[in-house]
Image (cartoon, rainbow, N blue to C red; front, side, top):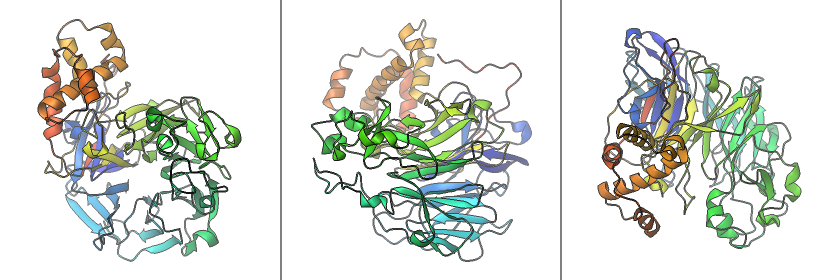
Length: 553
């Protein structure tokens, strides 16, 4: 979460990173009597639980990745840098943001560091960050926004690789530093051709496909000399974090791709889109999570043997003894960060579980792309229930989303400030365009899962026009399906985008929608609103005694 000073009130907020801009959630009703700014009318484009609203804190940040916030509300965002081989601008790897006048907006924006990458975290007097091959730290001076001196090299010597190169990291409370070293391939095949067997043994597991432990306070370490391979069999972990409640490190994994492309005799196109699970793990010393030999099938609820190693989509084999996921999310959603909220501002139901930031899929065709949200996975009696719900949506701003290139924004990071603070969401933008800068908003929590904006407006429109059919009123799936069809119609009418034959056939059975007029304005605003990378702030509003959450269904 991030912390911000609003009218003299110190607020913590949940911060998420999305392609190019930062969003911060805040409580629902603006508490002007306490000096807090009003929410953005459209919550910065986010769809949040009732009682929450959002405000944009900063914009114009291209390629934002992980971020963190100080107790004074200063925000630090790590930038990914060039992906095409072009040189990165010197001194621009980290963006420092400060609200100088207490209005909730970042008026001061400074850049420093030649080290671009993903991982970033404040710890004690230091700001740690990672490139694709090293971990550094800067000593920070209280009250000063940027560090004075050069960074100290903490760990180096990680393999250079093109794929899955991000070195996401986390700390425990015993001065240990845990660093992800992703697998450099999809599934360790002898060659990436249909039917090719996997390497046996997979030598990529020796230094990669694992999480390594180091001394967080010692400079000059190298992976091979000073590192300890803490867990193995992890394909790629970008979301990793410490849970103070259970005193453990957790991580969410990017699962493998292309089961149908590589093994068409065993898997159809739908399986390609739906397998394998994106998994949430608790990392315990010595655990093998099975990559590349195994993957998790959330429909069967078990680990199964990969086809490269003789599996047929049902056989378990050697996978009976590998680490099991705590929560299985849909395939290819791409978890890029996670957070265990331990503040006091959010309701109790959000204090026992984990927020997971899903960057969004690129390869779920022929189905719609998925993810592009912040989800919350709850615990009950100290154990994860295996369920999850959407907490923040609306990042993609396109529905149905058939290609990631059509997504306007994609979330990438999340952070927390002190108790009593706001939640901030940082998001990066996929496309360009001019937008409002420096917007902010506040949000208060609600007990129902977040629904896409279209679904919310559709339900409201239905209610306004008289009795609502039970199937629509009481079944979320029916509302979601109806909304996908309506938005496809609106998209065709407003954007004039050619539609696939299958969608045309489906739409030909839809009667002229009586409620299109209510849905269209929202969709039109979404499609014609061009946003730049921004930071938004959100916090829960105070709810009067005996107040009940708003019921939409």
